[in-house]
Length: 328
Image (cartoon, rainbow, N blue to C red; front, side):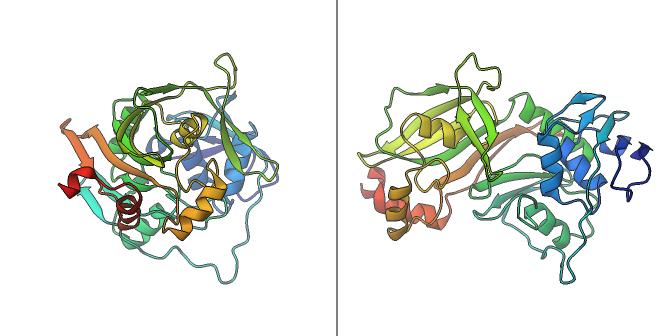
């Protein structure tokens, strides 16, 4: 089990703690490990101390997605413990449309507008709601993430072995992840590969943003996106977008940097156009995690999942970019 090896007991939040990672936490992301270990510490604060570099793993700096292993020592700076509000309630139990399920994993079709987990001003997300709906489940852990406004396929592990094997596939780029995105304007059919480094930064208000940087920028992370035009007209292009690297906001920033932002994107999009599109029925960003391929963590069988466009996006697409095949 995880244990404290320095800095006093966990409630003594005014001093440095050193947490040794136990076998049951091996393979977890650093953010998930800290959220589970630092009971009562707001998730927003956990992410803040990781971003600031105050959290160290074996004396080295680490990112939120760093994997911890059994025996690692995690240094945590003095942290504050939140006092639960008198009316604080647990996340409401909720099930989501199931695309695939067995004893190892669960694949759901996440609706737009629901965060995958609590934090950053959100008290709960998909994973907390699933845990409430399935109290008998020994384990439910997110394998990967989707932005709050992105709908589509989301994997949840039901066993530690499944979690680590699936996350290894994501990290080693052995999965096939294809999104449907509606880009503004006519995307050039010959522009099939976007290879632009991305850099995460914080705005003055503390909100996270991502930008394209020069190829020699030491802060940039190489990011590769493949684009295929499904259909288009002068106003919009429906794109099948496959990501080879899973960077934060990668598709959104890459398409916007090429002059064709995603319709409805409130962070990197055309804000005036978005207002007009709301009147036409597009109430959110048109980005959907459409297809996902991976090797089953136990059998090794290649699994191919597909989540159809939700009704709101499908209806808007029919209105603004009809499928020529549908009229023949």
